[in-house]
Amino acid sequence: MSGKDKIRKFRENLTFECLIQPTTDEVLRKDHPIKGHWHEKIFKNNNPIVLELGCGKGEYTIALSERYPDKNFIGVDIKGARLWKGAKYATENQLPNVAFLRTRIEFITSLFAENEVSEIWVTFADPQPNKPKKRLTSHQFLAKYKTFLKPDGIIHLKTDSILLHESTLEVIQEGGHKLLEANNDIYAPESHVAEEITSIKTFYESQFLAKGMPITYLKFVL
Image 1 (cartoon, helix red, strand yellow):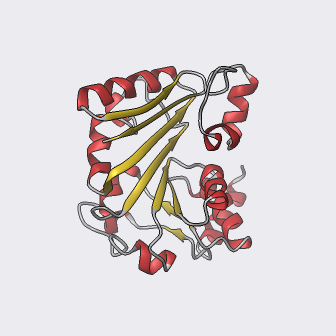
Image 2: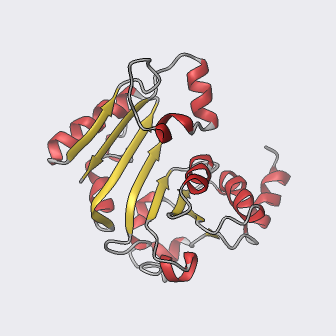
Image 3: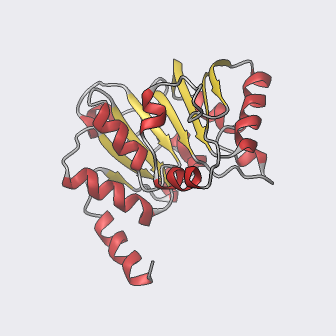
């Protein structure tokens, strides 16, 4: 992507009402004004809120929102040029139950209040092979999610990384969390997973499948 193309996308991002872009000063060690007010200020309803963390171009967020119009979906990522694609699609197609949030996930507790989120998806996140604490399913990040997830809130992990899959299983066991489902290859003939797990494929997922890499899935409650 050229520098000019990035600048164009960043400028257009400013016009998308569905894209919230907090400054670091607004979320560093303090609460953003949107915290606790997503239902009334953004979605104008009380439907459950679902996050996709590290959403990239927002493909999964968009697909889930179109499939479940009775839920609200927020895609979270730090890359503005990637978020542009999802935000543009949501704007052009007038999707009322989609928002995007440009921020570092380290700041997530500054943006969501207690019991504000019903569900979390982590899809094809960086496995951080040398930095286990930075994995989006580490003990440190799960502690952050617990501050705003409802008590029965579900976390989904869909990944091509065996490292991330197995390390998350260890975290679930060590933390005493409730494992609801574990699958080492969701596309294997003998797999029996919910259709939403296999029917929605991101760009990267399609690439991994083309290379014959297994896609794994975990579902758990804190």
